[in-house]
Length: 140
Image (cartoon, rainbow, N blue to C red; front, side):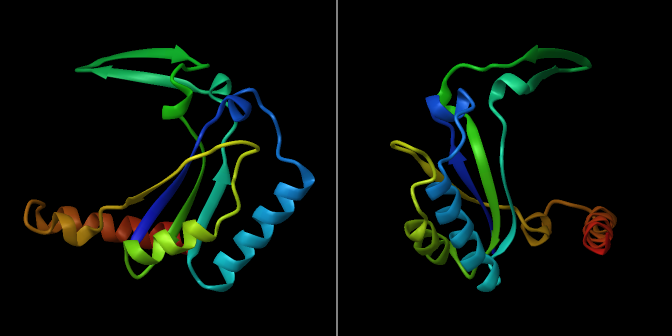
């Protein structure tokens, strides 16, 4: 199963405070463990929301709002994409993670939908297109 592991933002990450050399080293070692275990498919840190934009959709209308965004504890500062056996394995890996922030922090694990999850509701040609697009992405 694939999961996205979300590192929640903090006041420091939203202020653009960079990790210490020690934290950078610890996270690099952790990422190396994930790669060596064949779990990590992707992972990146995100710049503060002040560098971002939000787009509100309402029918055909689009409204763009520039960051920064409030409710820091609801923002994401980084992510990993993992392939794991199940949620228990993902949880065990997160428990091994160094604290990703300089102070208290939070990580959220969310499973991704897989093509099989849509098998009852999607037309076969929709599923075939999604599968083709995923193969094209992998081949790049």
